[in-house]
Image (cartoon, rainbow, N blue to C red; front, side):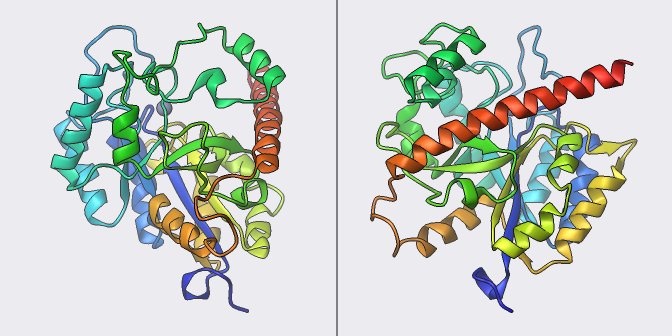
Length: 325
Ligand SMILES: [Zn+2]
């Protein structure tokens, strides 16, 4: 039986790796394994080091570290996609954000095609409660975050943190909602989609959320990979490969087993932007030319995102309690 993806592959799997806590030592073993399995994925980078104090991300390396830069360039030359996760690990003003884009273009030949907001960086676009349109859910989430309503300002013209114009011009794809299921198309069949109420982003995509190595292993429990293949699904795994995927220079044995199992299936393993380019063309016939997300789908997406977020928080809380015993 052949599948719907190029070359008759039956499903698609890739990774969008947020660079929090990434160092060459911690993440290279995973990338070596991915490359040896013929998987090409997407790695985000920070062009600039953070020179302020008290960042909880300061263990990460940036492109200012020569050995890290050389390694990231070797990844790019092997066909991995290099993507943006802000200019650095803490908030940057417009000038720094634009300088970061130029630096990436200088190093990799093009502006990064895909992007994901990072943690509490205030230049994030449409972030915090601005992710949500359902009024009561927006209020609850705003309360949970406890931030000023105008905390995130990347999409606010006139703000010193504004860079929405550059986002619209330079990035094709931005991550928004993440879920606990592997198959993103099950939750979000119209992805990549445009959202007219957030016009500075060309196309949004959804992903599977796995904060770290443990959650990565969780996502593949109970035959999830076989199900992804059976469903002809698309999995973009949003994770931090710098968090618990390796120990003493070795890939966690459970992670390795999962990746080898996936590679042995009839999957299509290309970077995120290449996969989304293909999806855009493939679904052209079935949705509106603008690829606008249908209203009902957007509503369901927000509820499901909130439910999955609560579930993940409960499970990680339980895990911390059990670990302490
Ligand atoms: Zn991050």
